[in-house]
Amino acid sequence: MQIMKFVTKIGFLFLTVTLLASCSGYDKLVKGSDFDAKYKAAVDYYNKKSYSRAIQLFENLIMHYHGKENAENIAWYYGQSLMAEKDYYSASYQFNTFFKRYPYSERAEEALFLAAECKYHESPEYYLDQRLTKEAITAYESFVDRYPNSTHVPEINSHLDELRDKLMRKEYEIAYGYYLTENYNAAYTSLQAFLNNYPDSPFREQAMFYLLSSGYQFGINSQESKMKERLQQVVNDFDRFSTAFSNSKYISQAQNYYTKAKAAIAKLESAGK
Image (cartoon, rainbow, N blue to C red; front, side):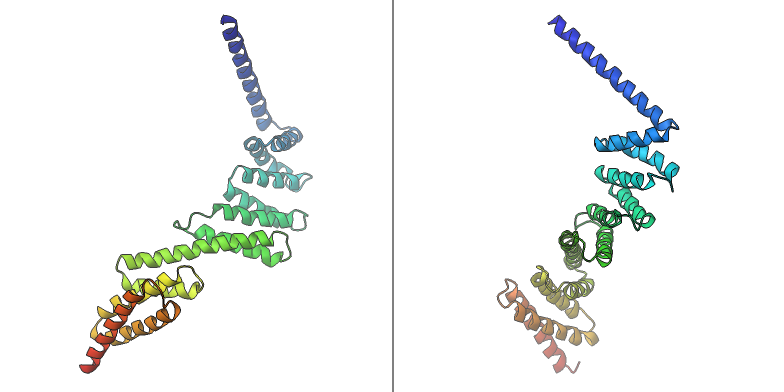
């Protein structure tokens, strides 16, 4: 038993010494001026998937090799390493830089695709801010405009559907949020924009109903000089809703808004307003 413990301690000490020596050698390499050795080591780390070490060395090499042999390889491996480490922001920037610097490279198309792909990976869940989603869509569309026959186009189209679905859901949630907080004017405007922007949305039925409901609430609480016009819009919205979704679970509620709107319009007309 004592022998086993001794062997274990010796093994642990050997491993510790080895790691320290390795780190010491790596630090000397990073701080040193043998750039050929740095390049070989960086590529070796990349091939071994030790990307964090490769990144530090490639960063050290980029300026030294700018405009020289191996500069393109360094830029390419650097971008690949950043992407492998899921530093998508930096990787996208690096691949865009690669494309601009080496537009005639055989890797140029792939670099532009990967720049867009990194933007795609940065896109957050639909309920969060969608600025990065819009950037990803723009990047993909720019790639397809430049390379319409690329083998990546089917994959890009699938990703674009996913990204656009996020924007659609985000826009609906914003509009519905206005409705829930009883900001009916904003809700009506937002829901109308949503329906115009996404005519085939799976949320179309709900959006049309909440549009009708918002319109009624906004109209019935308006100044009398504007009430008739706004309630007439409710009648028109009901006609469209009932035609599109005659069997909707909301149809009875929608009918109730329609009936109330018609009655209010008739009362205003009888009063000469």
